[in-house]
Every structure is written in C-alpha cells, then in structure tokens.
Length: 381
Image (cartoon, rainbow, N blue to C red; front, side):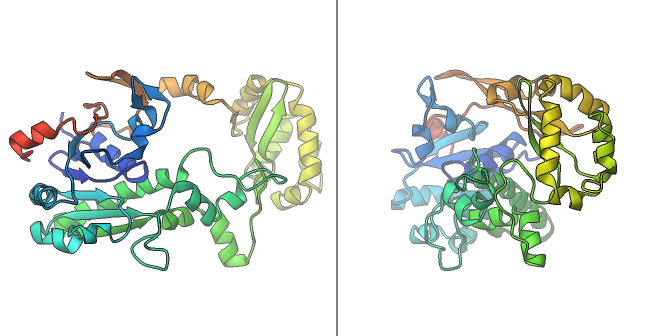
C-alpha cells in the first residue's frame, strides 16, 4: 500500500533525540531515512540504559524504520561520498553545533550547489544566530532557560524539569512540520530550503498561556504543583486509594460538579459562583472537595465524572498507563523484530488516518548495518 512520503529520501546526521525522533516520524510515513554515522559511533544515546540484548532502549525509541551507514565526514573521502548521496536526496537533517557543517564544507550554501532542491533542516540548542548560537544546548538546560522549570513543581519545592525530554520531543514535532512545509513549497517553486530550528525557540513558543499572560498583562505565573494558575478546581485530589486529576474548566461544569458531589449549595455560594471567585477562595474550596473525594476510590469517582461529563483521570504509574484499557483499545503498542537483538516493543505513531498508511518495516538499525548495501549500490533512489 502506498505511503505519503514514498520516494522521499532523508540523510539523517542527527543524534540523541530532538532530531532523530522527527526523522522517525517521517520514516513512519514512508520516507527512506538513512542514518549517517561516524564509523566509531556518534550517537551517545546508544550507550544509555536500560538495554535490550545490548541495545539501548533509549536509542530504540527514536530510530525505527531507518537504515544506518557509516561515513567519516571529517575526511575528504567521507565528504565526497556524502555529497554523492546528496545528489539523490530530498532532505538533510542534522543537529551539529552551529558552524560545524560549514567547517566541514557541508553548509547549505555548498550542498545546494550539489542539489538545488535539497531541504536542509538544522536543529541546535539556540539557533544559527544570536549570542548563544555557538553554545551547546541540552534539553534540561533549555527547560531551565525557557522558564518551564520555574512553573513546574510544588509551591514549596524547587523548580523541576518535566520527567521526559519535552523540549526535544516538541522540537521533533517542528522538525516534521518544517520539513513537510518545505516539501510543499518545493512542489511549487522547485527550490530547496534551509530550516533553522532552535530548542529554546520551540520551548519558549510552547509556554502558551503562561507567556501570553505575562506579555499582555504582566501576570507572572508561579509554581503551583498540580494546581492551575488561572482555573479552579483544576488539580489532583486524593481519593481513598490514590490521586485523581479533576479539571473543572467552566462555571457550567462547576455546577454539574457540585451536583455530582451532592453539594449543590457550593454553586450558589458567593465565594465559588465564578472561576475568578473560586481562584480567590481556592484553599477553602480544595479542602471541602478533598473531604469528599477521600470518601470514595478513584474508580468510583471516575464513574461519576463520566456520568456528569467532567474531565478527570487516575494519576497512573507508567505501567498502569501502558496497560489501561483505553490505550490498549487504540492498539498503540507495536512489536518488531531485528535479526541481531530480537523482538522489541514500542509505542506506535499516534497518527491514525482514514486511508493513509503508516508502516513499521525496520527495527532500529545497529551502527553501520546498511553500509555494505550503500557500498554495493550507492543507494539508488
């Protein structure tokens, strides 16, 4: 069955997560993604445990559906071979430090002489311009510098990073968006494109309402744990058997929530009639709600939340999340086999089309696994 990105070739020089996760999404959609790695290995993620038959599960999560070849781009021979590949490629994806590609003679200006239709996406911590352009940027540093950590964590505790590499994950989404937009533009102009993508830019743009509030009113969001800066009740409540997230986003929902709680008088209380008033009297309201939530289990409350159409869900462990019936019903866990390290499980691509086709053809490759294929056939497109 045909895939939307068939006949699109990606030369992926990227490492770790931010860019590789993006090229994996392109591969899921049918692009031929060729990892170009140093013969001695250039991706530190291969060394991060835990391991499945000597393969890093961190590396496995971002590299399915790809091939791997080895080239030393610091040598004339390696650069020559790479430029031969560029002639028949559509996309170059890399996350070297700013200036490294230029120093190797592989800048966009040079590569578009080889292939004017090439799309070059460069992912860096801080972008190609500005005072920090030449500095390395890692996800936790970006989370810290962007202000994300300042609004994450408990009120009394320290600023806290998100438990997954969220700046890398979000940047991967923009890798795909940017490349697809550039491909569409190339369809119309027959010209390639250079995409300058910075982790800090991405994470700053993802501050959403927090940034908008400060830019437009000077309101500075604070670290509130699982509470919301602007809405109440909108947080985790303890139940008889554990924590439950409840989100009451509107005055209408609050009225239904009070009915569910069998305390309709709360909705008529002047302290709680509007969201603004609820925020002002949040501590009192939370105490009253907690006294009620502790009388039932989470599952008992979830039945009622669904009945009254109020958003809510268990605070699951990772194991519970992966095993929950909704996730299983969506058929979101896949399995693929590699002849060297055996079967691996993975979370599937969340895109579900009515007729487009996502396939899982290749397990994440070992270092240089497809180099011989390259040497024999020069990887004809």
